Image (cartoon, rainbow, N blue to C red; front, top):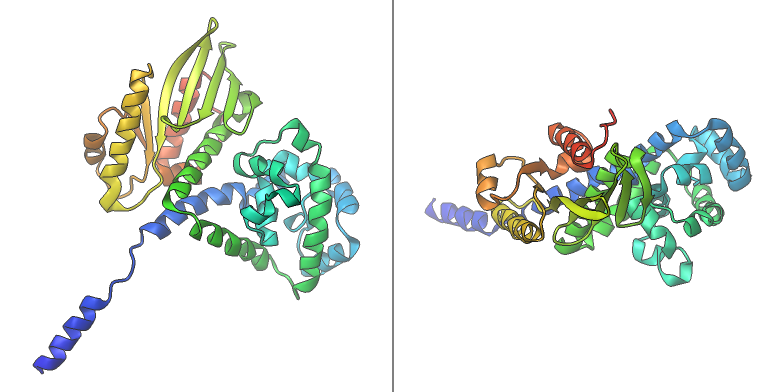
Length: 334
């Protein structure tokens, strides 16, 4: 009897499954991806597109044989084939069609494909004038490859269209180290903030948004480093710092104090540069506010990163209100 107990104890002691922190971190990016690159984002864009334009472009850009197969399967053409009207409405959907095709970023955007200029469209939803002029050619070239996919998948279904992109997206995340995942979270927060102020943008690049606020002043929202994001306002020709924002995408509870401490160091640096207000976007679930505040007393406001990336929840609502207030623009409801 004693031998069995000892064996059981030894066996139990050797079973150590890996922690869940990596998967929770992946979930943060997954909820953001739903708003940028998955079928949810596509459906939202299609609801805003002009139906007649979509019909006309479908006839021009989609091979007839593929259209017949999709019609027989009861699927919308746009769920498989990119159209200029859709890409122009939601440039980030370049990523949806890339993922549907099963192409990793590295091979899709490499020099030999000529597609590298579309990477900013996928990651930040930005189309430069030069890239916008190439959207029709992007749609034509992608349609050839996607038509081949449709013809070779027997009885393609909507479930296939939802799950096939996940295979490539999961591999993409798995191949990323923690630093790259953190940078991705930072970019996704930038895109989320862009949605808040979108109506007032007068100029944009992949890393900077320029707005015109209610006082007719220019406001700049920049993606940078130390701080990760910042908001500045131009007053009488001079640039005034408004808020420094740190984004911490990690989820491991045992390391949360380090992440908050890293935010504090960045905020202290921003404070010396003249920023008056400091926000930290971090995984808050299961943590008491006082524990975070102890690690970063400079932070004025804390926001949960998952709420922000998912564009839902109380912290997303608070962030929208704060961003509108700091920028000096009316809050667009939604």
